[in-house]
Image 1: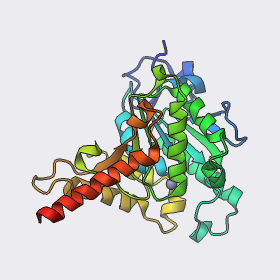
Image 2: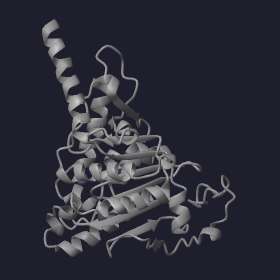
Image 3: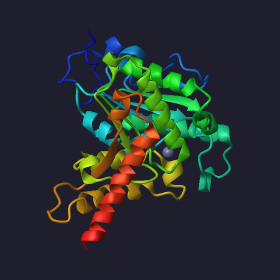
Image 4: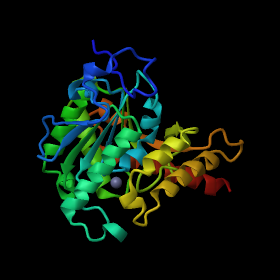
Length: 315
Ligand SMILES: [Zn+2]
């Protein structure tokens, strides 16, 4: 059985006796491991230098996002749940290569390849800041990730799921308005459905990105309280200077959305939390492979419509 690997030598020396050298830790040279993934530029980065297979196998919380920075905003609950823990490890998967990222200011002159390098480095920096167990970047272009006829992304995700065998999976929600986000959610669902039942995760959560989930009926919301982790959230956001500094204040917007959810979720009670993320439960789609994802979301929208209708009728 795998021992939880030793990590973060400054804070955990006394908490975990697993010695650093046994996972090849070298504080001066963080290591990048290559595993069997389709794209030549794909990588698995392990911040503490633990061998890649063991680093992936220790995962408890897996986040699968389309773009560099998506995980830090949408799957932050998973990062926060694992940060500073010895038995919980977050593993991130970013599916695209960042070559299509928006650029402005000092980055305006960068070509696609240079932008991809910069975005990959930013995502690695976030993995270090968030103390991730491992960070995979699959390096698909956005059109490749969105192509339903291209099975490589699904196969890479299946490989990552087998290697990590997580308890919880975070991905995009199916009602997101960014087509690459929805494509990644679909690919994740298909990869999960292809796994043997015995390694299915306990829970699969579709998270907020380009559209929040305030509209979900309250009894269907997955409520993720991340109060008390504001400093970690700010530290992670600060890794993505090329986007936030380029005129998209995702850091403020995400913190504001979480604060708004905490206050507006209940009109009749004082706030019980300061920062809340909502999720869409995707677990039923994994338990029942015959359940159509479109119909599943239609059902939620129908129940939202009925809730609004009842309020108007009663008003
Ligand atoms: Zn995104």
